[in-house]
Length: 218
Image (cartoon, rainbow, N blue to C red; front, top):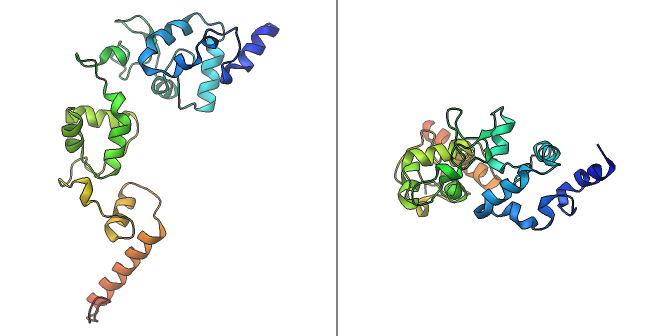
């Protein structure tokens, strides 16, 4: 590798070297609406392989590196094989091994892509919405909501993905036994207020079984 190439690779994280195609417009590689343009520019970049290696080693969560999006890099890390999209021809890592199209080319006819709503899905799931409720609010089939959660490791609000139809306004706040159960169900850290609520409930139940008056009795 020549000295100039070494310098170019060293500056990849900041994208400030004029040797790389991303130097002229760095924001392009973080603009999802211009993903195809960025991928095309990456295709002939001399530092592409090194760029991708750096992003994979650093587990870079943002932007397009080495010609692949953050979602595609996650798939590469699990052993998925990259291929050329049969629709647009750009390099991609499909979401299924039996698929040969990139995420952008598998959007709905109206141009929507379920991955674009992943942040909203994560927030609603954390607030206690079921897959069905999320789908109704975002206008997606329940199957696509479930697939998006699994693809991006978003935990379900309920262990079976369904559960009761409970609006977010009814979700109990921290400091209650219901919140303690919610933390445990999602494998989240339990805060002190919820732990105290759980201990108090356990003590009341032990007293009730022993026939003694509970803490709420007068």
